[in-house]
Image 1 (tube, rainbow, N blue to C red):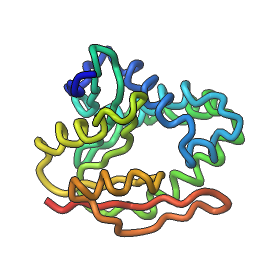
Image 2: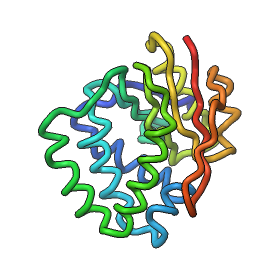
Image 3: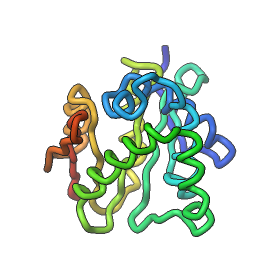
Image 4: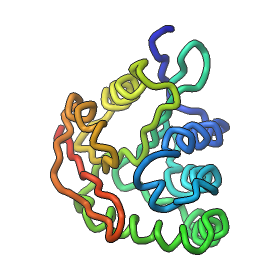
Length: 191
């Protein structure tokens, strides 16, 4: 197997990025809290990439042996989806998630929003790999962080990933406890 090849995802690859992330996060504690039956994860990630983490040029894709293997979605400092995205996002998320999952998703989102630093920074919203053990996570972080100017932040939902993020200068700054759900760790990188 070759080293991952990373590049900025093209706009027409939004659905590919969403599919990679949906597969990578299928067993994630937060995703399993929101979607305990495992259904609707794909449509949810497609909505995320279409309406929430949709800044042009802010998603990266890693290929291993020519096949999509991992992806990351970043929000640049000051990112806010455009008016059209904000108007249609609520109904789209509600339809794609279903009422119970949407309610749990709002609890998670509120807890993450409350914990996020109140400053302009790069936000690593999602990073996931369907091909593991090949250095895709490291390659994606290296690729984007080489171009990032200023601080960055992420919520880590899996303690196994903490050493990876720490290698790239992220430090745990807070614990985010979801009521009746999993724990996440806010991680901040100065630079």
